[in-house]
Length: 148
Image (cartoon, rainbow, N blue to C red):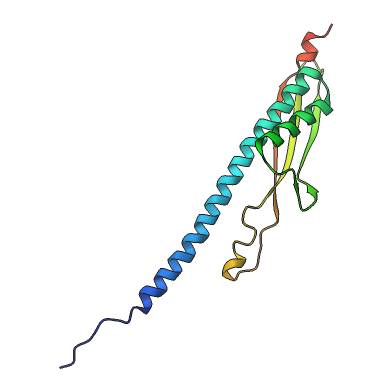
């Protein structure tokens, strides 16, 4: 009678390689999405600061400077490959009696954390170099209420 021996371990080796590769891809995606959540929270803070400055001063350029100062203080990159990543647009200071408010929209192209994540495992790179994000904040126009 012949005794059957166990396998050579190739299937165990293959399973280990596949789960390690899949785990690294999942870890990269987790890091990417958590960094995007962090960038969004910074953008919310920058938009709120810009809206607050616009509400106090009524000046769109001062609001844009407040947004830039917040982004610089947070350590976010403001340029990527020579291109500016952010803009403060739709800065509006309304003196309408029904809606006296200042509103600031911050647009930011967040650089992708791992642009070659899928290329490392042989897939073509389908991700853009940046991910566009936009945040709008508004504040009560204090200049409207305090002016004579």
